[in-house]
Length: 115
Length: 116
Image (cartoon, rainbow over all chains, first blue to last red; front, side, top):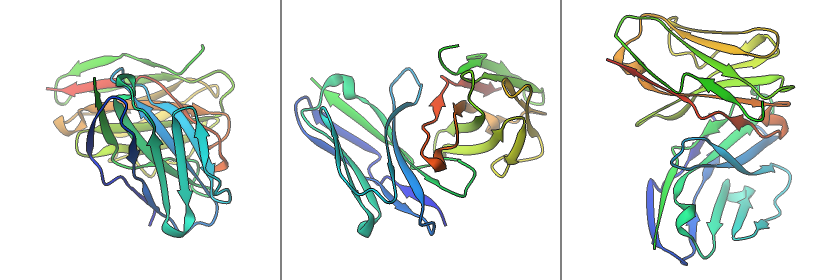
């Protein structure tokens, strides 16, 4: 079965706090990609990052960082020094190589950053 | 256009009527996807097009749902005899290849469908 689980439905933090969004996935495929998307109130999904199954290097982009651990099937996303503009719903998604390109999404985590 | 364009942005229809939702992908993108986002169901895959053919229709919830793509570009999602449970935001996405090969998908802003 192919599945993505984002156990945190809602997270609320105060500005400047660090926050980690969890993502756990299931797949039998050995080749796949993982993605994070952001959905602000405007509704359009915005691509943040992709990671392939053979690359376990962590990545940092400004205040954003991602930790991919194949051993635990997790691809967690951390925002450092959160800002109000980070408030959005964040989706983790899995795309197995041989599944025609569809994205299998988690249920999303709604992040609220309060001033 | 610069991004994926969907129309209409909002649609209210009466139960039992047919609706058509349109998607204009980014020029040159061969892959096109339809997803549905509803409360409690998250984002569900509906159908995938590669060019004008649909190799994966596995997410279409019933035979009331159909989609086509013409000229390797514009796609239309049609829902016949709409039901209240069809109320959702319908999102279209396009990509150069498919995300299983690492290509990011670009999403439109969606069509919010309300069936009354």
